[in-house]
Amino acid sequence: MAAKIKVDQIETVDGSGTIALQNQLSGMTSVSMPTGSVLQVVHAQSSGAVTTTSTSSWTDTTVTATITPSSTSSKVMIFTAHHSLDSSTTASDINLRLLRGSTNIRDITQYMGEDLTGNFNMSCADCYLDSPSSTSAVVYKTQIKIGDGAGTVATNVYVPSNITLMEIKG
Image (tube, rainbow, N blue to C red):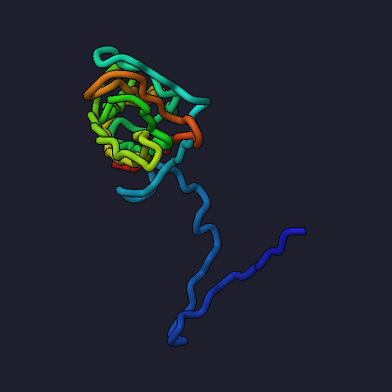
């Protein structure tokens, strides 16, 4: 059973007055929230390992999420975390990019560090503040390709990667 606390007033710390609580939050909408407020949060995880051998073509990572902003003035804070970026070949860096729909909005190059087995692997976290100027559904996703060298690179191999979108009132 859930616990409830019911009060009509709260007394100030110094005892000089009270704060009435009747209907303080009734009618609260995203329009009445102050600028900078978080209006909604969307989170998604990758759906499996993705590999590529290309140095020229981009490959979707399955790190994708959709958000529908409530206002054209809203900003979207995008947090991505790619785990298990891996290369067992001479590919010494992975190029990542963030897209809004089909438009590239951020390039991220990750230089790989060799582990004790001779493989290259790491994780990458990034954040970006976007201004989509839309009230329609907006899709954000990431893509990878080999940045330097040759062979095969992969992401989401051992641990799923993820993306979090936060609508910020503008």
